[in-house]
Amino acid sequence: MGRIKPGQYQAMSRWLFFMLSKVSGIEIQAMHRLIKTGPALLLLLIPSVGNTGSLFVGYELGEMALNKFRHFAGEVGYQFDNNHALRIGLLNVALSERHLSSGEASAVEGDDVEGLWRGIDLYYDYPITDTIFVSPSVGYHDIIYTHRVLGSSVGSASGTAGIALSFTGDIVPGITALYWRFSLTFNYSFEEQEEAILGETLISDGAFDFVPFIFVGYTFE
Image (cartoon, one colour):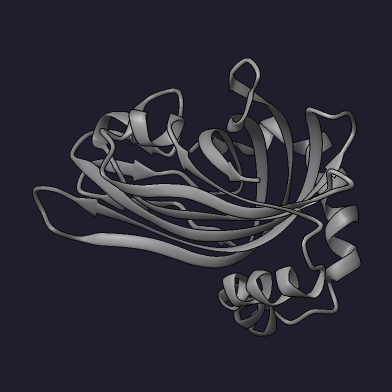
């Protein structure tokens, strides 16, 4: 994960706030309920289209590798014959001290703080080409930061909206069932993480996050 600080997202915030204004009439609690039913929604939609596409499942490598492969991150989705897709991303990642305090994440300034990141995102993949997709998303994320020595914790939970730019391809040329996806994901949290201090460690504030996900998976054709 990567926290985008205020000075870095002024131009982005204007654009994203315009996009988010389209859903501003949705109350946060109602959005939370919608996201929590995301997997069920996907399962309901798939039978309604018949045999016109393919189911796929994937495992996330990038964020997992940065956090010592603790717990799980992945995706499940359904791609239609017109190359559009519905996709759900699932996160249950134990965030390492090294990753949180590194320049990759910019979430923590100091030592001895680890985290737990749980989230779900529903994406609609719109194809720009056969292998490049733009994907608006809504989701729900819960992140807890814990001081390993003191045992104290802070965190935030929020509905999110965002957009992803994804590039896909075959892991092995000619074997289309095995795929990779590199996804540049931007998220806005409706309830911003407030700046906090655990011991002598600063937890950064911010509402925008940027995460480059790397998925490898299998398509059931």
